[in-house]
Length: 99
Image (cartoon, rainbow, N blue to C red; front, side):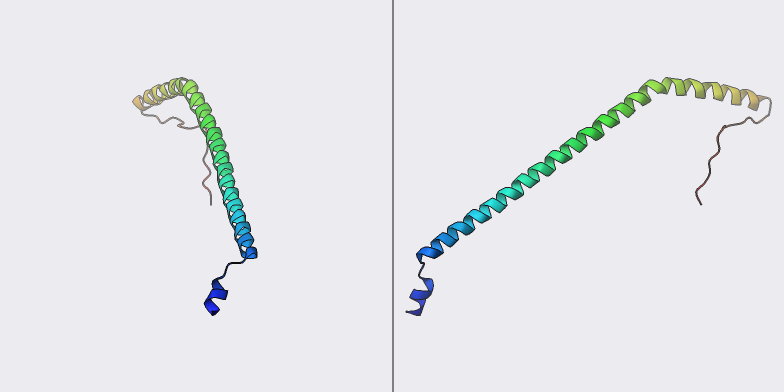
């Protein structure tokens, strides 16, 4: 008799279970939408990084021949100084080591 009363599902309990089901579905949908939004943000950030990398690589590709010609001229100058047993100025800048 005690168990019949304890496990008897009344009309109010059915509505409470339905309301809990709706709440759980709503929270689950909110998590899904949040995850979708985060994925979109990550994709946009990835796209910005790839565009920036492409621009840097294009800049490097276009300026590389200029660097190569400069270094070739420097090597010829250093080799000519070496042949007469002199040492030239290898770099015109100074590196300050962090303390």
